[in-house]
Amino acid sequence: MDKIPLDNKWLPPSPHREEILKAIEEGQAYIEERGHNIPPLLVFEDEGGVIELPTVRYLMTRRGMQLVAAGDTSSSDQTKHHDVCGTVDELKGLAREQPDLPHSNPAIFSQLLDDACYMISRMQRRLKNYEEFRAEMAALCKRMTAIEGPDPNVEVKIADEIRVILRDSKESIPLRIDELDELAEGVRNIASRLESCLSTYKKAAIEVNACYEAIKGGRNWKTKEPNAS
Image (tube, rainbow, N blue to C red):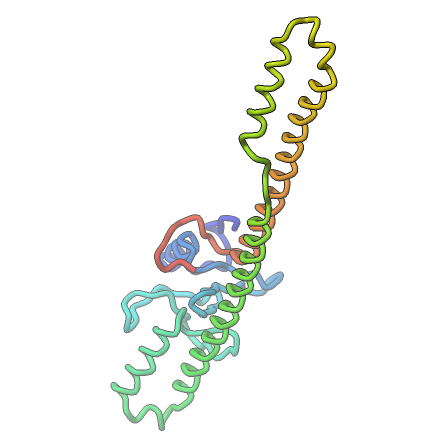
């Protein structure tokens, strides 16, 4: 993923932008472009949350300081919190602190539930992506398991036999030239089989990398973080 410039016009002001960039660097989120002059999204793929980038704020929540959306988040494809836990904690907290709120303003709870269901649906879709990735990896591993290289001891044996012929008297070598040719071709055959074997493994490794890049997408997976998406 390309590094997000600090002067990106869609990034909110400090200190919010630094926390966004930190989340991206740690692989917890990535930016999804939506076209010219349309605000991009900050996507927390494996947590389900989707927040319009300019509205993202680093604020105190019931779970401590978190990246959340500021203002109205009634869009069907955006969420207030970046994960279901934050959404559930807010729902529970509001119901406990303001027991009349579910009747006076039910839309708040409806939106939180919609957010949670939307994030879960995104996570289920992501799970399907991982399951497809697993199937592709299993098929590739099965193919690689079937790759067989030549016996590593054969070339040593052939080379020793050639050395014996070459150490023979100069009168004997012409008499054994056909034998020498056959043994030498044996060396070539081993090398050819090894080249073919290595080429097959290389193609499989390239496929593995392509599958990895596809499942990774725009996420930064270079930094090892326990909660990285």
